[in-house]
Structure formats: structure tokens, C-alpha cells
Amino acid sequence: MKRLIPLLTAFTLLFCGCSSNGISSQNTPETVAKTPASPMTVTFLKVGKADGMILQTENHAIIIDCGEKTDGSKMVDCLNEKGITQIDCMILTHYDQDHIGGAAKVLKNFPVSQVIVADYTEESKEYTKLVEAMATQDLSFTIPTSTMEFTFDDATFTVYPHISDDYKDGFDNNCSLVTKVVHGGNVLLFTGDAMQERLDEMMNLGNCDLLKVPYHGREIANLPEFLDKVTPEIGVISTDEENLSEVTVSELAERNIDTYITCQDGYITAVSDGLTISMSKTGIVKDETTETEEDAEEEQELSEE
Image (cartoon, rainbow, N blue to C red; front, side, top):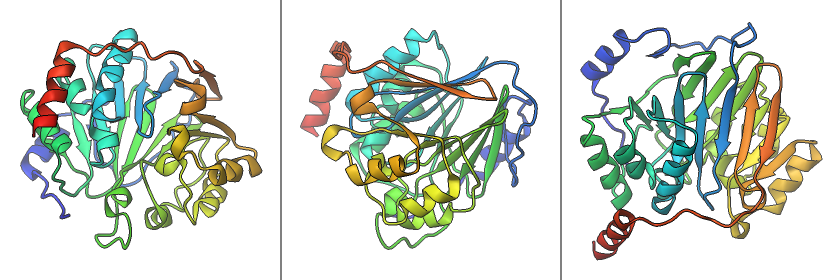
């Protein structure tokens, strides 16, 4: 793996032309002190051992990861059900197939203003499909090499890129972009597949109210220390039954963290009003996502490659 070289000219032009609701690069995140005028909703999709999240502010839609390729239709269906017609920002934490697999499908069905990715390269079918889908919208990757901050309505997003270039274990996972979202007095933290060395880098991020538990809730040696540092009240694990770690669930329970798990709770929704976060879940229901002719053709194409 090697770092990507940012397209500095395009990066500069993009950020110089942004409005207050657009994207701007900052070094120090500022907590929004006032009560937001409108709520923010986060939907955690049930996508097996994968991540797929849709965030909505009053006027904007943001995606963090898109699940496996077969989850692309779920992402599209969920976006349509919410009445979303444009994606203002897509954050892909890293290039593992269970995080970028469905991105091409989303890009084929919705205009996307910006795609933010981690600073390394990958060779995979999913990565190639992603690049090809971006080309149809004339998009280039936005690659933060230092802390990046932007605001949509009343929500402030801070994206933290990986620091080391020499992780000893799980390089791809440890390259995960970590995103902090501040909405009024609420802080939500999305950690991708961060493993031990990446969590070490994130120990001083401060407290959060909701934590998307890293690496699908798998057992990580320093996760207890990380939980004690960020002290979440709510934890969300996106995984399947086969990969669910009882050790991690116990660590959360010992700290009285209200825990939601996609393989048990279905689609999970968090609604922030800036003061509190209300949680709801669909429960396990039959997956009614129907494979389209296009999906079948893409699956056949991948199997022949």
C-alpha cells in the first residue's frame, strides 16, 4: 500500500469556493454551542459485517461507508425512501470491500458533490468500480492529509486522517478515517475499522455521546481504554451474528453503554435535537430489497473477471 498524492490544485479550488454550508479545511474543531434549529438523523443500515450510514441535516445528506457491493441496492432504497435526491458528501473510511462495495451503485443513482477517502491506494474490483463510477460524474477523490472540518446546517464534521505510515498490523483498517460530528451539545464519533494502533492515535478526541464501535465490534486490546477515554452513552455495532464479539458487548455493558447491534436490532436510527439523542430500531424484518436486472448483470460481470 502507498499514499495517494493529493490533487492540490483541485483541492484548493474546491475549498476556496465553498459557502458556509460547504466544506472548508480547519485545524481545530469548534463545538457548536447554540441549540440547533433542526434535528440531525443518522440511520445505521443492517448490512451484515459491513458499515453503511446515512446522515441527514435539514438540507443536506451525508454518507459514511456503503457496505458490500450487494448492499448498494439497500443504500439506494433507503435514500429514496427518505426522499433524498443528492448526496452532499460521501465519506469512505477505507477501501475494504465491506465499506466501499456499494458506493458505485449509489454514485450511479445519485449526484454526489464530494467523495472523501483515506490517503492510500488499493487494487480491487470494488475500488476499480468506485473509480469508474466517480468518472461518470467527473469526480476526483478529496484526500485529507491533516484534520479537515466542514459544516452542513447545524452539524460540524471533523475528519481525522491516519497519522502513521507504518502500522504493524491491519494497515488498511488502521488507515480508517475517523469522523466526529458535533450537533449542538451532542457529539457522535464514527471510527471505521480502526484497530489498536489507530485507536492509540484517537485517545485524546474527547468525550462523545454516541460511538459507532470500531471494527464491527470485534475484540481490540485497547478498546476498554478507548471507551474509558471517550465515555460514550450509546454504542452502535454494525456486524452479523457470526462476527459479533461477546467480549466487546460485555465491555460496553460493564460501562452501562446503551448498545444497539444491527444483526439483532435491524436498521437503527439516532435522532439528535442538539440536547439529547433518541434511538429507535426496526427489529429484524425480512429483507425486501429486490435484485434488479442491473444488479444481476454486475454480479455476472464481477464473477467473470
